[in-house]
Image 1 (tube, rainbow, N blue to C red):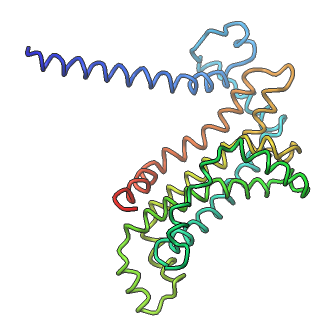
Image 2 (image 1 turned 180 degrees about the vertical axis):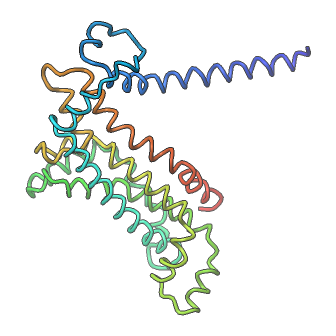
Length: 282
């Protein structure tokens, strides 16, 4: 065996071992979370180091308690409402704004085009205090709709940037043909741009939904009434309760995590296609 062949085999083995190691590091917390959520309190206390789940002893009591005794059915409804409204507003505004920045000519277009992501120069922790003070003075702080507004401001710049890059790859001749056939600008967007941009729109929608569903900092600072809590805020309140069973926190964490994982796995191809389609231009 030549030295080059030996080095190639060693690198291949090390690469496989590294991938397996990182998969275990990433997957183990999710595995332990799911397993613990199906165990009874007695089993967790008597055998805390047991990493396996006996199928014959699967217990759904933790999910029932979390949903109906700790108000998580309401938190799920709140998170779903906030996420869907944020996605609808962000995708709509980003589509119109991205098209305007890409195709229309107006004063300040170049500055607006290159300053879309300027808000991301400021960490969320820097913005949360001024927003907290402003919304408190306006008596708007404890409101789900204010949370939607904050999430929209948080996700819209990236959505605009992604769609602008994608729109730049679309041939402008198709739009000219639509205008010649009598379409207005909005007609061109609705009948031509949106159908051609389905992968990019799907990736923007998934990104926005993930941000709105998982976000904690603003929900923690702005929401005080338990009936208005989102899932992430509810999990923290549940984890801070006195005399709380571990499996309840694990069941609540599963409820937060699984919907996002399912959506990501289902729309992964659209996400990758949408992120890479505008990579050559823009």
